[in-house]
Every structure is written in structure tokens, then in C-alpha cells.
Image (cartoon, rainbow, N blue to C red; front, side, top):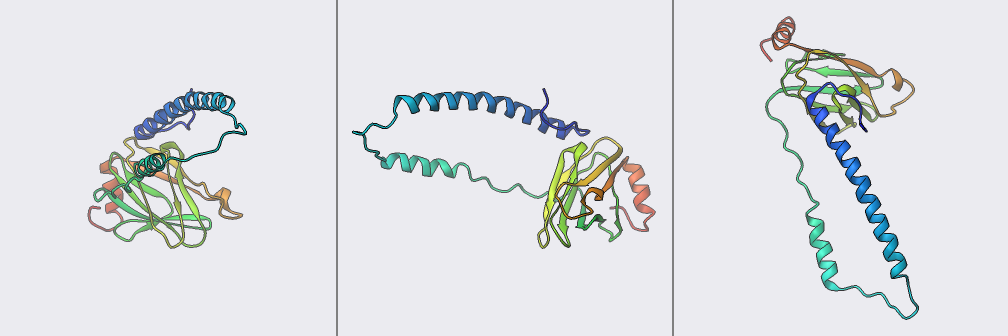
Length: 194
């Protein structure tokens, strides 16, 4: 059973299978924990003669165990095609390294694409459902996300954050071309290789 959207990218399929595993393991673990909790709630219910006590070693363990949850942020990709994305009510603008801007995102297949996402007005969220890729576009903040789509084709890009009355129409397309077709398209813009 799948708990996630269908995907067109191998990386998205990997994440979706991982999500499915987590949902199934989490359900089993949740049932076990709740059963264990209910058992101990009944077994050790409060008695009038009992007083709560906290031991220092418990507090120390919990404090040090919490430090294991601190994870450093992922390192940004330095290679690949870097494209700036600006969201505004109710459209997306994609700005390529040469300064060319477009309402559609065109990228080469099989290459890392790094999107530097921001917004000019309200919070948006760029989302490519078939690749399971998305991130918020927040005014005054640059959020970075990357993807690599090995298959050519046309895919929908949507806004998944309610951003006003025109939100339902805030979609565009991702066009994935072969590397040679992309170079041809890019060279027609009057610039050198990206």
C-alpha cells in the first residue's frame, strides 16, 4: 500500500518507499507504545501513599540524549544549474544564470538543478508533484532546494500555500529536455553554455 503521491523521478520513488516503511513501522510502534502505556498507567496508578521523585541521573540522560537530535543543515550544492525562482501573486518567474527570465522552468535531463526560491509579496510554496519536490517561497528569505530529473517530459508546477484569491490558478510547467536540446534552447537565448 502506498501512502504518498505517484512520482516520475527515481529519487521521489525512493523517498516514497521510505515514507511507506516509516508509516508501517510507526503504526506498529505506536500500537506497542500505547499498549505499554496503558498497562503501566493501570499498574502504577497513583496511590495516596506515593510521592513523585525525580532522580538527577534521569534528567542528565534526557538532556544528553536530546543533543543527539540536533542535526546540522544539509550542505548546499555548488555544482549544477542554479536558477532563481521568484513567486508573486499569482505567478512564478524563473531567472537563469544569464539573466533570462521565463514563466516556465526549462531544465536539462539528468543534471542537478538548484532552485533559489523567494517571494515578492506573500508566502507561496513551489511544488512539483510528480517529483515530490517542494519548498516555501517566503518574502525576504531565500530557500534552496534541488532535484535531478533523468526523464524528459513536461510536468506541472503548483503553489501549495494558500496565497490569495488567485491561488488555484498559480501553476506553470517544468519542461525537461535532453541535454543537447537544452543547450540548443539555451543558446537561442543569445548566451554561452550555462
